[in-house]
Amino acid sequence: MKMMDLFKSMTIAGVALSSYAHVHNHSLIKGSENTHPFIVIGSDMAQTSKSLSTFTVIEDHGDSQIAIVDGSEKGELSHIAHVDHKRCGGYFAFETLENAQSFVNDSKGNKNAQNVVFADYNLDQRELVEEKISLADELSIRNTILKLSSFHNRYYKSETGVQSQAWLKSHWEKLTEHRKDIKVEFFNHSSWDQPSVVATIEGTEKSDEIIVIGGHADSIAGWWGQAGKKAPGADDNASGTATFTEVLRVLAESGYQPKKTVQFMAYAAEEVGLLGSKDIARSYKRANKNVVGVLQLDMTNFNGSSSDISIINDYTNEAQNTFLKNLIDTYLKDLTWASSSCGYACSDHASWTSQGYPASIPFEAQKNDMNSRIHTANDTIEQSGGTAEHALKFAKLALAYVIELDN
Ligand code: BES
Ligand code: ZN
Image (tube, rainbow, N blue to C red; front, side, top):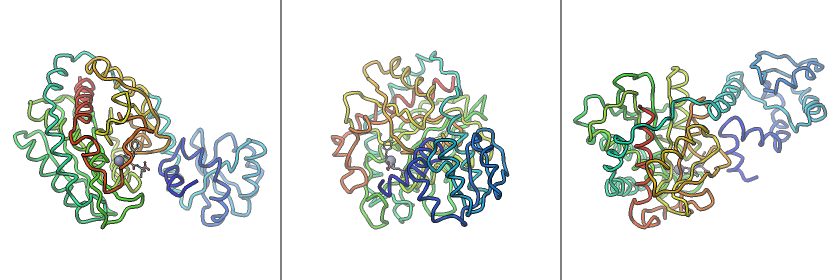
């Protein structure tokens, strides 16, 4: 397993981590016998583990339990997992109780967010949807892509990565300056300089219900990044950012006043482990905010497959994915969709999923057909034919999504 893949499996707790555990837990534990006393086990293992003298359950979470066990007995615990429960490794070890708790909570959130139906997905707003869709404009999207990709990079630790977010904020302010019910703010992160940018249209009737539409605004060159490297990130992810900027423009300019609150989020620091969106999704969860739907747009402008829109089916909410497919069939009749999977927590939707919120990501192509120039100096709009034709389809879908979910 490559270092990056290992990192990917670890970025999000839950499904990916259990497969990670299956292959790698022995080596993970070995060097950490005394430094990681907190363990999380499946509840089915609790009974058999009681035979260990230092094993104590400290929190029962239903399907799983947090326990402490002395390093000297971890080998025995693995043995029990292996022999009695046919598992390799069988548990996760953590340095602090807090880390163990967030692991358990993320796993719970993951399960919930993928299977529960969170909203009414009836389609009954044809007139309004068709009107707004007709206002989406390819050239507006193209110009935003060109502007964002003109920064040397939008890396989370570079000066230009801060400047690009300041530009985006002022651009959104201009697009919405005639609207007193729209505010544009930075969401600052404590561990790095690049802020996320959040635009909020306050709901008129059910303002506590929040619809989130977003994507990452940062870019990177090379898989681990360097502040000095050129990274236009035109497709990854100026395209998604420009796509939901167009949704904001259309809704604001055409006077749409949502009943629910609609928030547009340009996340910082996605390319280094979904950091910006994780920070935001966690703070929403802590504040008990009622997010009824999350739409992630990451890479929308490279038309690499025969179907137009790929709906990613892992780390996403199934019912909301079906809703997106119905929106395409109903309002974008010329377009075709297919399902595809990332195989890991590939973008910011996973940050919301792991906090228990329903998220989806309509994607530019089948995973195998996606733009291969991302994370290089060649991720320019020319790779997508120099226009934003493909991204325009996603702006229309996102407009239909917001309007139908709002009503
Ligand atoms: N946009 C890319 C990758 C991607 C691929 C997103 C398919 C959605 C569908 C994203 O910015 C990225 O590079 N993600 C990383 C993982 C992240 C946790 C650092 C990746 O794919 O390796
Ligand atoms: Zn991306």
